[in-house]
Length: 180
Length: 233
Image (tube, rainbow over all chains, first blue to last red):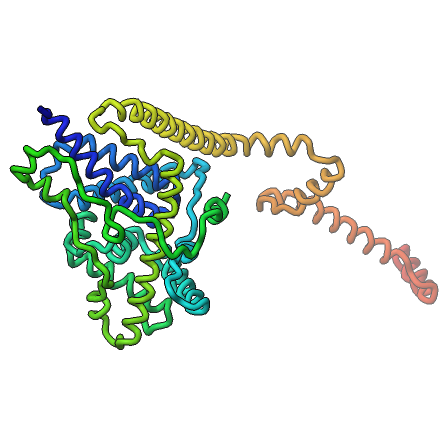
């Protein structure tokens, strides 16, 4: 007969298998640094494992994990800012490089080129966003989370999330040649 | 090495990105959980099953709220956002698959072993504290150095002036003396200096007058002799 600890361990293993790639993807798109994203993903799941018993299921596991990831990311940048005297090595790449990974689909070469260009422009805009705007934007348009989930994960109200999204989209629109 | 170079070996523009455990390529949801727990589903279990259904359409309700955007523009931005999402997913999937190939994807084998994170914590916390302490120490040293430099400079200035005067080149001495002469003297001293000069000037004038009065032009000599004889008489 399985003990409660074993059961919790199995549950958590399932959560890891299910959500780890998505947490990694969010951290990768947010930090643009593969090594850092891997490290933060590990830390995220270690922290989640430590606090798994306190998770009451009031929100989805994904939202809970995403909240941990966002906080870890914030802590990381805060520590980086405090350690200004350290020569930090950043392996971050531009988000516009994501355009190189655009699936070709059934498009002509010209269409693909235009699509790559659009993706690069969006990537540049996302890089220029504030930390909070970028987080909200990525959660909405890359991770496709609902506004309520984003609000819970980022610790913001839904109204604030909408404002951040609206501003971020306005910048994308301006970059793509639309009216400001 | 740049990221692009590092992962250049992977095929780009892949038409079939690696499957991810999310909405785009869902891995089988949590299987093999305790049947006892299945019989009494908890909130935690419900949360684990699936967070959301697959979402294919871009969420453009935020865009609808923006004034002055026609359908074509809406579609263009929607398409750009969709392509961006696909790119990020493909990029992440490629990195993830490379990660899995390195057999490091299975680095969470036993989540029941809570002790696995203890050494990590010890390893990560200690250098952080050390770095923080080192940073503060460096900051204190810098502040102390700045303060002591200021104090040193402040105290050095009078000594420096004296040293400069001693070490002054000899050819500067006359100039300095001249400068001293040109410097204004007090009123009493000035008067004291002028008085002998004035007296000497008056003496000189009196002597000149007497000399001039004694020198008589030759044309007036007879008259002068007459006057002298009259005076003798």
